[in-house]
Each structure stands twice: as structure tokens, then as C-alpha cells.
Length: 240
Image (tube, rainbow, N blue to C red; front, side, top):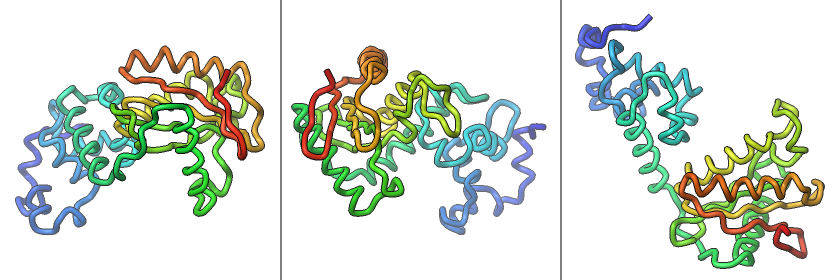
């Protein structure tokens, strides 16, 4: 049951988000209070704190909320273009403040391979994936084709035709959507795809189909698909 927006004024002034922020600092506020400050006002007929709580419940938490695109946010109950824009703007400011400096320009597939190998070397030095090399990674670049980030696609490439589940890999649709989401979320304008064989199967017709679908899908969201490469330990090749 929702609470009328005006009911927020029944809360003691010192307990409202803005006043608590001034008194306690951002670390003293709950997730819902911080989101409420970003929203500024509630959904129709719902106060801003309840609106913030609804967004967190719908998305699963702050991390998920801050990783969503405008179109994904617009699909949530009660979220319009203005609210989606505020949330995405806050998330983008945080990312820009924490982004590493732009990397090398990815002019050729060789540059993509170099970026992937540097990422794999860092993984071996301090793995974030439990020590296992990722099967598929996305190399994200900005509008000037400067490297932004190399991102492993978790759950990719364990036959993609199988239904997605806790023990099964992504479907093709899910893999394409996950790739585009990662690029957009990280502020990318272009990307490359790299297969790291390891103990995983060699390139298949399904992977080639994923590449072809990605090329088409990327244009619909204004992204540029640079290349798809297979990066072995001592060799590499473009995906034919």
C-alpha cells in the first residue's frame, strides 16, 4: 500500500533525508534515503522515500539500479524519462570520477589482442574470476576508439543454444543483450569481442552467428562493432 506524498511532511524535520544528510553526511543515510535525494520527488501519490524503496525492490539494490540504462529504467513501474535521466546521470558522474585514464587507441585487431592479453596477465596476477580465464570478453572503447575497459562475460560460451539457467550458459539473445549492456553501461561508443579458448571449445558457427547479430544490433543503439578475435596463449586470429 502506497503512502500519500504529503505524508513525508509528518516526519520530524530532522529525520528527513535532506536534513539527515546535512547532519550525518552521506555515510549515515540508508540506500533508500540516498536514492530519494537523487529523485527529488516521489511518484504520483507516493512519497519520495517510498518511491526510492520501490525502485530498489524492483531492481534488486543500489548496484543493479546504478547499472541500468535509460530504456531499462523506463521499463520500471513509475519511472519516467526525467527520473531515468537523473539516475543515469548520477551513475555516469560516479563512473567518470572513477574511470582510469583512456588507454591505447584500438585502431586494428592487433591492438584489441594486446588489450586482451594485458587484461589476462592482470587476471593471472590477481584474478577476479576465481583464477579461471574468461571464455569471452568485451573490449570497450570510447568515441575516439581509446580503450576504456576489458570486461569478462560471465556464463558465456557453454553451448549458447541451451536454455539459460543457473547451470547453463546464456542464450544467444541474452549474450547479445549482455554485451550491449556492458558497453553502454561503461560509457562506450565502440567495442570488440574476444574469445579466449583455454579449455573451452574452438569457435563454432554459433559464435559466428553471435558476432553477426551483434554487428546488426550494435547499430540500432549507436555503437560500433570493431572486430572479433580469437586470442590463444601464443597466437591469435580474427574470427573468420
